[in-house]
Image (tube, rainbow, N blue to C red; front, side, top):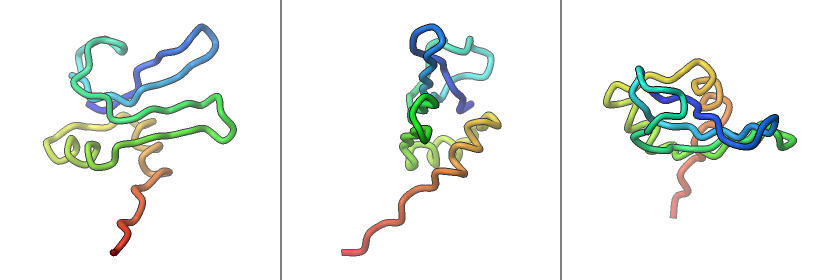
Length: 82
């Protein structure tokens, strides 16, 4: 599953977008970190490794609803032709 893991100090959330087994704890050992999300900046900052998200989706990983919304709002940049 691809979901958010909360980091940061109290009342200062910072999230990692991680690939993790569905039954593990929220901040448990993850398989891979595929991005970050910082809601405290204006506007909120999202940094994604789109190729890794695509890979994990291809092998059957499901996204949480919030991560799906973040990926939808931040599409992969178009490749630049040389």
